[in-house]
Length: 373
Ligand SMILES: Nc1ncnc2c1ncn2[C@@H]1O[C@H](COP(=O)(O)OP(=O)(O)OP(=O)(O)O)[C@@H](O)[C@H]1O
Image (cartoon, rainbow, N blue to C red; front, side):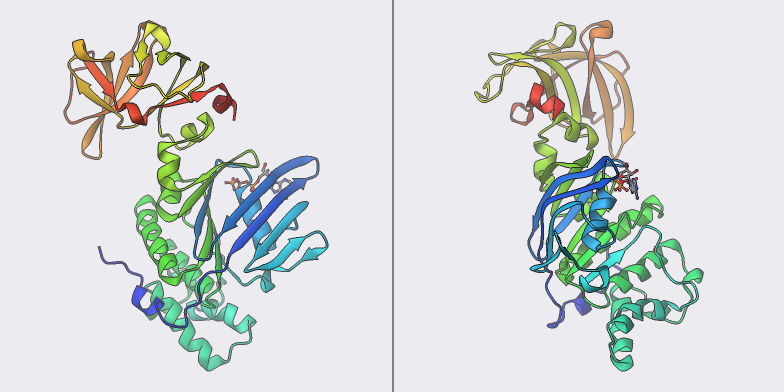
């Protein structure tokens, strides 16, 4: 599918590369409540970071601290090598060299699309002739070159968000901040815009911090994802690492990565609910004995004849999803049982007995420390 964004025009010799971001020991309190607790980040120029987490975990507060809309209680922020927040130092938002895109577009209704996009240039004292050229280029990058004279109110939600994006990039800032930019758009538009923003960021080379509570969006757009919970970064990794190696039950559950079966581990044997015993053919020496959860990622199971299978259960439910039948297999007896998910290529009678063998190297044992992390 051809992107609506004009990437060629973005790749000009004068396109600045992104600026680095360094955050050390950043803490923020509202009254007695600690909202952010000892946040540390180091982003190289051009890096795209997603801040992902449930409502109230502090991701917008972190973005506001980066933007200069809030002053931290403690810690340092450096943007492009310049300290912008530290004890006794506070650089206001307009002097941080940032572009920002908000959830509600924040366009001025009394100005045309072109005037909205030109605003950051006017603030920087760019001459009118130069302004016009740069506004058209920014609008061209987001596929709205023909819309400069329109009123924002006449545009669809997706188009308004593209105007907001053009306004954020028009001054070619080294850093772009996004605060849930797509949460007001419908699903289809979100998917298209998500891919396009990702392409645009790569083409411009901007460093970006992108706040979202949608894990598909985060894993699509970002080079690395920081999963947040209760004011802390619980895991910061590349998408592939997060998916294969969640370091805590919190991260695996939040990203809905697979089944987390409670059990007990000792000497290569997992004792799972309902009397199921799973013997690992090549146990990993570093895995600690004790109680914990066995993480079984989606698609880490394949069917075999029940008499040969280490895991045997019954088909409990099936739902057609993206070309396969997402199948829930119940193992163990009665209320003591547990469920595993498996992608079947055909419809199966409910209650049918199935045998499953795991992709052993993809199973992870999350011991008691990972359960409470
Ligand atoms: N000005 C404020 N005064 C007091 N508490 C605040 C203030 N702003 C935010 N909070 C609290 O700080 C916590 C984190 O808020 P924040 O907006 O950063 O979360 P979030 O992860 O971005 O959530 P959401 O996805 O809902 O926007 C919440 O408990 C919120 O109620």
